Image 1 (cartoon, rainbow, N blue to C red):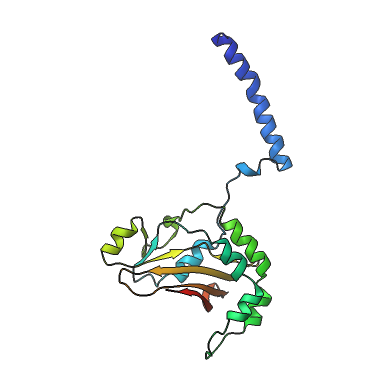
Image 2 (cartoon, rainbow, N blue to C red):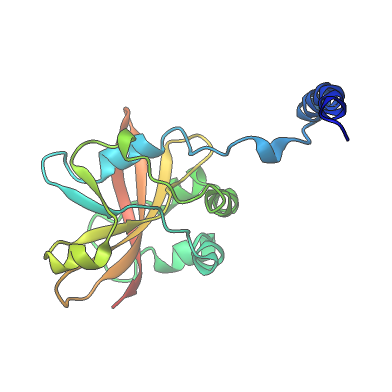
Length: 200
């Protein structure tokens, strides 16, 4: 094919491609090309719940996916009721308020969707006291701890959130993974309760 012939084919094909994509957008067939985004409150939540802006908080530089076993086994009403009060505790918050406000079936779907968003943490949206850990081994050798995070799961209204995270210590001490529950009141995310999933 001559160069002139090649350009002629391209010139004819290009408007067809644009038309096909425009049609696909209208019919919803091009959804896979539209970038998935974090929940609009993700970074507000992290800024309010990680530290106090005075002390440096180190977190692993990317989100970890929430494991399927945790999604299907822990984000259920039966699990929450069973583990809400493993030990007698004072000032135990009302689980009914939480369960009426948080559709856990929807939470499982949201958690699965979160796992499709990639693992990027946008540190430009976090306050300066929250710093990334890109080399965990070197970080621990420098006698500094860090946190491992998964994306928070919000209810449909956006006034409750569940966050799973765990610390990694440079000293040989035990750690634990927890589901922390927060409630948003008057624009502020307030710690509500937590459930310990494992202890090492």
